[in-house]
Length: 157
Image (cartoon, rainbow, N blue to C red; front, side, top):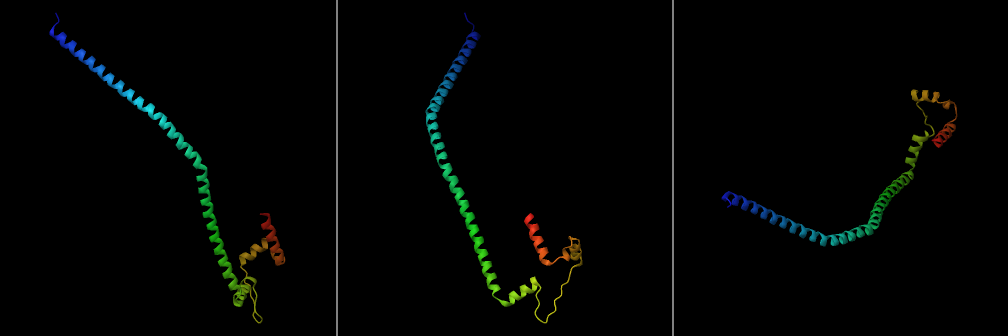
């Protein structure tokens, strides 16, 4: 005859085994449901992914063109604004050149012109004169030779 301790141990072991089997069955059913759900969503997800990728590919080039054209338009507007400012500056300069006093002032400043009866003086900076003497005899030549040499030097660069 079985002892009472053996029956308790056997019943506890049996209960544990039954509990383990029930848990395993629940986990198995849960995994099957997830796999079923995954298999149903996989086709849908693949189709949705395919549609999204197709839309991205179909819209990528037109969107790139749109962005590029917007940048070109902004650049052209900026250039147009710069050109309008330059036109305004040139109009102002043209209007100033219509004034005889302005032209006379420019001639005095840049060309060292003097009016009849005036005496013109040119003050030479000693350091600039020294640089001129060391510059291959540029002071000994006429001014137009120096101008042409400057043009030739700029052309070489």
